[in-house]
Length: 263
Image 1 (cartoon, rainbow, N blue to C red):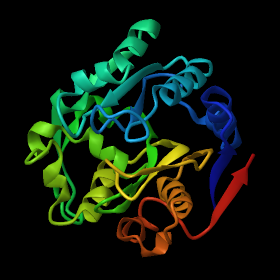
Image 2: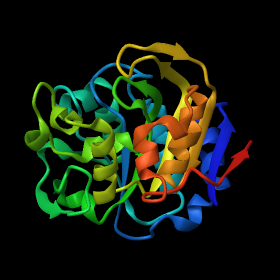
Image 3: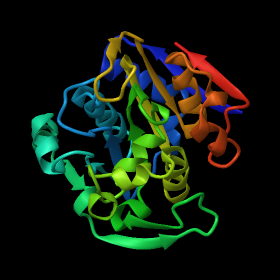
């Protein structure tokens, strides 16, 4: 059974900590190595198009108090330069304040991986720094124009270096011929080790220009399929009708037996 915490939003610090405690995150964080917080910073638009800096700060403080591992923040933005997006959204200032390393996956050194069982991405350029890291996917809860929802799993598109996957925009090659299959494939190469979803305010209708909806909660869990299934239901979708989730079910996690722990 996969456990997903759903905590009523009060503020980021307390709500994120409560959600992570409910899934036992403290005991499963690595004590050495590198933890990468991976927000959704697809472009320089303010939240809820992108992940609130307050959410990232809350996850950072939770981890910092419970592990000796290095904690970094990483992204490879979908439009523009990642360094510019970090600066525009306050992540550069956050990093300076706490001495956090910022990682630009679009420019990172990579290793070429192969997976003959992939649905369409038989090879993948993986940022070397991501490969052995403990990755916390920290998306906003949003509808998506191609995959219906973009939550913890599709957020991992950010690890794909733009110089290998750019076309009309930095990740456009991942969207053809099937965005849903690419979501599964990227997560087969590197799925989130832990998911925290900023669902305080969701974006309905479109991932870039939708309407705001006060969903008022924080989600957390270790199973990205279960987390995305719960988040998709919050957005009004049947997860069993979402292609990327049906493809990932039983492969990257499970949406068939979910325990939702509420607070």
